[in-house]
Image 1 (cartoon, one colour):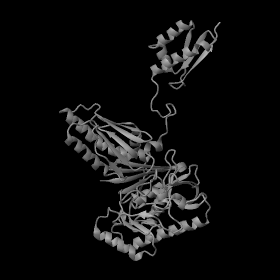
Image 2 (tube, rainbow, N blue to C red):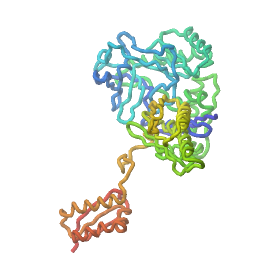
Image 3 (cartoon, rainbow, N blue to C red):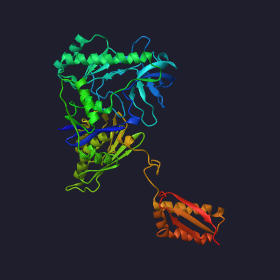
Image 4 (tube, helix red, strand yellow):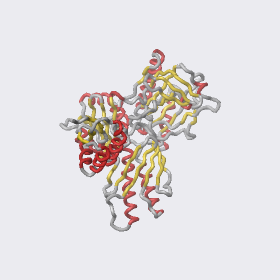
Length: 519
């Protein structure tokens, strides 16, 4: 499978698309005025401790205070972290941060666990200065989430300076290679820092590993130095931009080549590769076409379609994706597809086709949280098993952690997907100011009847001898046409003429009623 990274780098915005055989499967967007802060390290000040929630608010220099749970707090007095590791001391390949805009990056799966006798009040006090790393950028009204468990990612390893632990990605399945990496690290490690071997470290020689360890250790020393001399709140370490994260995390391991349209960024990428991977020759191409790079690779249209609620299937069926604050509902419909054999086979084919599209759309749109899928009801258990098997298989391509529950009696599938960054709709869209985010407008007939009711209620207060109503042109046409009986009945009731005037600049639901005196 041919995988390509297409980077559109223009002033104030960078977009990265991951293509598989020419089809976009993931898109990442970073803007200058709202660059993701996930991965950044700050010297913060504790604003408020919340014993009832075992959490605290930390000021890191933004309008919204950051949030930290007790499990994410390092006991700095004893330099001891209460933690629980996987028994086999291994790690699953997951994402490094819950960043709204970060690229996928493996991280250790050890989970800090608070000590039974340790509460948030024992660890933090108001006004205390602490070093924190953003694990999840703010989403909507929620402020960023932070942790004191710092992790610094390199090409082959992740440094965890607050814990003595060695982990190896479970994607490295060869036990001989796992033992080689573990012994290699023990022989060259000069401190008690924790390290995670990422998948890319497989087969890498000792000299390269040592070089990266030295680089990460030096970076950590610089962070500590800035923390000592800096005031709170302040930025201590800024994570890589989206372009360089793409190079570090996806190029070679996830993609065969990178195509970028900015000569300046192209040169910076080349320099970055020389510094990070001097011995590895990766395919980086400068795009010089006349049209936009996203247009040249047919990406713009795919992104636009990913913002629509209804997605058509090739057979004629379709799925509808509705996003709410709490969950995302996906409904499967047969649409225009009537099948060729029997009804059960028609439903099965539609559901199976929908499974592939749903898995694709979830990944492309970066839908996270609770997801409810309403498949078309199937009578045969064998059909249900086939659909669920296909869904589980399709979701394996997704790097984000997912959990799929069995199909219910109502034909619903409940699943969760880890939120790693804002979904595509939240990134590119905002609530409609016409309908206040409802997604619906009053029907034209409803507006006519609303005008009728308002005229009735205001008739007694109007002193003039006629009414003037200004409305949207389509409403005016309706009131002069099919709904003219409404106006005629009011003119008879009030013995006053009612003039309807179209206003082209009015919103469909907008109208104004005036009184006037005609001699």
